[in-house]
Image (cartoon, rainbow, N blue to C red; front, top):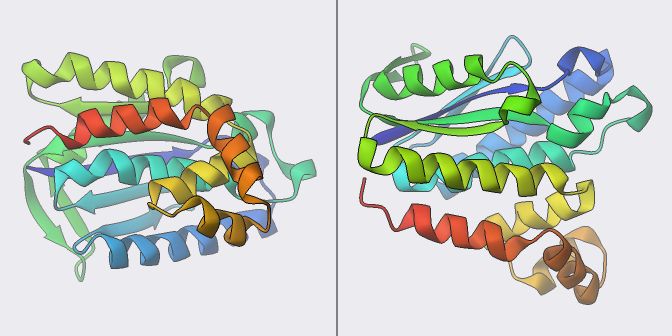
Length: 215
């Protein structure tokens, strides 16, 4: 089983031209990091505000989706040019788990069941009230439980502040608190406070559940 991620930036038209260019550059840098950490990962940006990714090992897909969501939410753009919905939700993101018929980076082609599943899920999330994180799989045994952990994790992530989202981002990358403190230029006690306030233990429990599944 492979996995894909489809996503779009919420209220992207509220971001200035300069902010859009800056955000695209930062997402490109994030994709380079993910390509190094997860061999076979491929992420691309389409029309400026839409993202598609392929992940060869489905078990990594939930963590990668949360990394992308936390990264977008923690991105520092000009606040005066940001829409409140962008500040709160950042991105709509859906995971599709299934087979892929074609993954050709050179020809820029992604085609298969997984990308259709994630793409359809993003299309159905027309407003943040319907959720901004979905997991779609053609397996009735797992579908309900994965839907539940996605909804609960989404609610936690959407309540996180930018600083809390930044801590979540680094924790998803398995960095230690002392390393996070150095990256963020704050005390380790400050990192611990953000970790607790962001309810990281709930996110970690959801990850543990997902990553134990034998896809």
